[in-house]
Length: 214
Image (cartoon, rainbow, N blue to C red; front, side, top):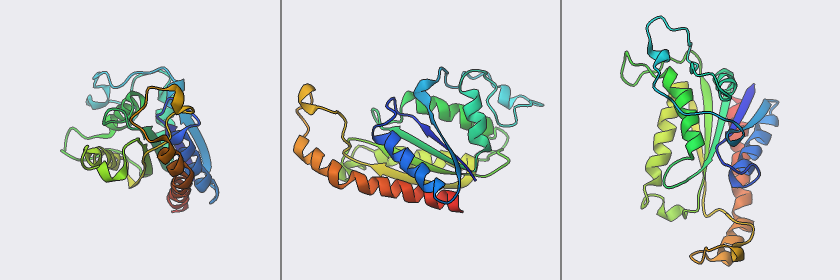
């Protein structure tokens, strides 16, 4: 079982990265081979509409034709058994790096011959981790539920099962007193960090365990 995790956060060891590592630990506990990739370490672009993957007789085989530092990661993701993705929520969406990664990963495997069909020849199970400042009770108010459901839906292009984990009211700064961030109740956030984030880490571990143990 090969499991690759893709971190769409610019920080390697903060909320998103930590949860992805917990998910990988869960996968490793059932014997999976794992790898963690940080997208912000790479230089690449999103889809450029070259349409090489849609030309008749193309030899892309579901792999984006662009040759840059993302290409090997895309190949590994498509050849994996489990793909774990993580991104903080920025302005109601995933980070730009994660969005560009998903465009390059999924578009070559989305059929233009039959609406809603996938041309992907294998099955890759997915786990998607979203981290955010947003309290859980306000997710629908700010339409983050649509964001989450949409990404769960598009991962269906890889034809495997998709699980989603959301982590709310995350600890954003090492020192809140040094930041212009008066809207936050720092004591409440610290309390939640101490009480809730370990629960989220356990949930991430269990997600990795389930997906890799299938």
